[in-house]
Amino acid sequence: MVIFGVCLVFAGFIIISLVKVRYSVQGEEKNELDIMELTLTDSIERGEDGNLAVRSFLPPDSGETGKEEPVKGKVKPCPT
Amino acid sequence: MGSMIGLVRRLKGRIITQVAALAGLNLYFVQLRSICIPALNCHSCPAAVFACPIGVLLNFSSLRIFPFVALGTLGLVGIIGGRWVCGWLCPFGLLQDGLHKIPTKKITMLPKLAYMKYGVLIGLVILIPYFFPNSAFAFCRICPAGTLESAIPWRIMGISSGYTLRFYLRITILLGVLALVITLRRGFCRLLCPLGAIFSIFNRYSLFRIRVTKEDCKDCGQCAKLCPVGLNPPEQMHSPECIRCLKCTSTHHLKFGIR
Picture 1 (spheres, rainbow over the protein chains, first blue to last red):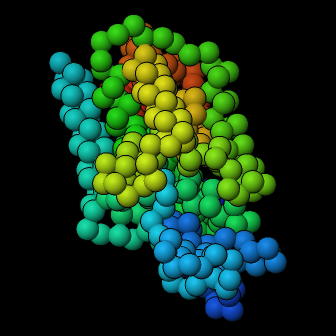
Picture 2: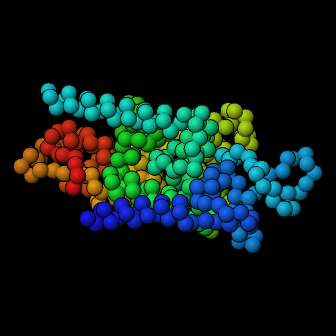
Picture 3: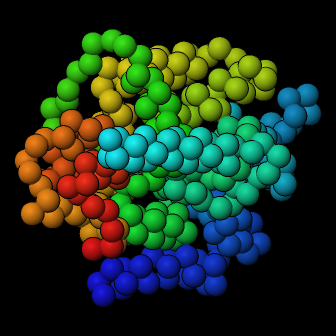
């Protein structure tokens, strides 16, 4: 009976995440699975303001410093 | 004779399951990396299908987000069978089983050293990424499975950033771990694996577990000789170190079933 209860708690974690948990990333609502996918390519970080932000990855010959507004959707493979 | 045949069948079944898991988790052409599968299989591997739960926990810790899905998945799998994933699914476990067959001098382990893996889990997977998100000493940056499955393949494919000091550090750690598992059976699982540390918490409470029947146990010590992690199953059947490989059940003095 206790094990059944514990199973329900863990299943509840997954259900709550899918149904309710949302994070704001640069004004866009993302669920945990989206965040998970972004983390796998090191494409998301906590900004200096403490909010989640998509990292900018600028090509080396672009002449940009990379310190301007983050560019959405440009990701690079995990450096590991 | 019958028990020997049973043992061979069971061992073969476990190896087949481990190899199937290795292949299934690394299909290359399929990517479902928003799904977290409870085995130490680096999601930075070019062939990986699913996300590694330790990588997810670490990344979420560095973002300071509660990992509902990863913890829910690990908890559900753990409460059902404890550390069975270590014995039956983990690709790095399969590698360790294979390497330990190399004929060299074997060593035994002080039981207290097993607590190291909890230190790795709390320190390198949770605390360091939480307080130092870009630290070079977070677990994934030095994970031997990650080095083998992702750092080396990416390097060979010419995509990662070259032969840096960090790359050599990772290779050194990998070689150290490989030397360890050749001499100490399942050395990485027992000493260092943070995923094993999580599942080990559930061994005592899991739904499926090993049981000994007093009338069947003859204190012959056969099951202890078979145990890959050096346990004496009749006394330590709920030990956090048991990887549920079920070798001990081939003696027929112990049974595996619902509690």
